[in-house]
Image 1 (cartoon, rainbow, N blue to C red):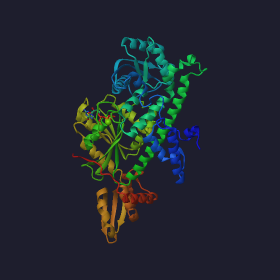
Image 2: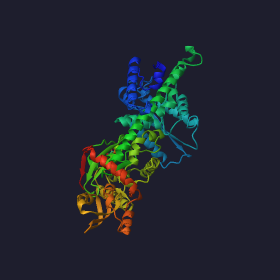
Image 3: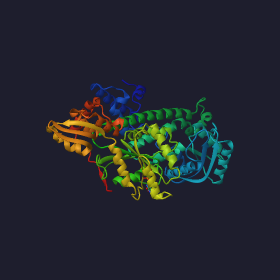
Image 4: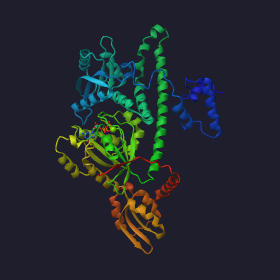
Length: 558
Ligand SMILES: Nc1nc2c(ncn2[C@@H]2O[C@H](COP(=O)(O)OP(=O)(O)OP(=O)(O)O)[C@@H](O)[C@H]2O)c(=O)[nH]1
Ligand SMILES: [Mg+2]
């Protein structure tokens, strides 16, 4: 029989204060017996019922409210998202070279503040050789910020950098005026808060919660300073009651983090399985990537009538949206899956990149990336570089990519000149997602890029397999189609799936032409026979299960 202690050790996530211990024990032992009977492992991570239990039945309670962000809790007692005043502090570290100018970074920080619900009253900045380990900025700057706080009667400061927990604590102490508390936020906290406000789907919420908790864990002590002061009065030796609370909160928070990691791992593997299945249909995936507010969602709406939320705010989109669409200019692949996803930003917090792995992997797995750039922004070049950096980080920089210069209707110079400039560059196109200008060029480039995904084919199809011809004609570009006495000889390029279908009729009659064809397509698209069997197995599986959802088909006529 399990004792109470052993019980919570083995089933930490099931122990919920909302249920009686007796009931929890009974339930877990029942489930354990059930699993044991079926020969399943008792390992925590391998128990689907436990995942289900954790996700849908109980969430471990922690003594503090960890589902809301600390600073927002302290700002608004009611928890409402009302506008708060703040002062922003820009930091330009000479040791950390950036493509963005200080002015660009400051205006971006102001936009971030506005999106998070903060009203910027004053700005200041400092150029530093290296950050001060105690307060990040110098002592003189700390005094200046304190004066600004008094002058504007404000109690929130936002720093444009990632502060360490101790720097944040020191700044709060030094900036506190007349014993009134001052809230010190850094760029990471601000972005995390925006993400927390915008996450709608369960997956998005899990990812944001993981990033939030990872950010919070080393900063937990700051929440309990009021209890630390009781240590002497409480007379509990050298340990204050606050310390015990921190320990238990830290343990609960760590266990919540590991639960979230487990849950996200499950999401990731589910997505990977979906991707593997998707590869067996002829629908290529085109992913919209780009800096936040570049116009990705507007472009998706313009092409597919997806009805995705469009806002002149940073990180309006957080959760990926995929739409199956039919673009009238596309022939080889008339249907494509288009995905709109979270935008990128310079100095993207590392916790977010790690937490959003499931979403970012979707980008990395796309067939083609449409890199949307706001060409009307003075920072368009730096933004483009920042996006490429994140793509490099997630291993997607070498993907087939089309650069879309968006918002040409707002461009300072002439629209024709920017369209001409894009036309002169490889895989570049200039459009306006709002007016529709240039969208025809985009579809044309997309068609070109999609046909580069095709693989070379050369086969002699027997006359009793004429049923394959309609599919071959639909998804291939044929250079030769010769009706011979022993069968139909074809040479050209086609989709991966058609190439797999023709694997058993493959013949190598014209090696030179096949070589030319294969030069058309990228190396990663060439199929090797080792994969054929595995792919055909999947094909049979996919055929048997009519599980393809009737996707919404948007139409766009050019
Ligand atoms: N003038 C003009 N405005 C545009 C164009 N494309 C988008 N916008 C505007 O730019 C703003 C941001 O557009 P979104 O489509 O939400 O941008 P996004 O890249 O999806 O942004 P996030 O989801 O926040 O990363 C909105 O106000 C759009 O109306 C365009 O071609 N011309
Ligand atoms: Mg968007």
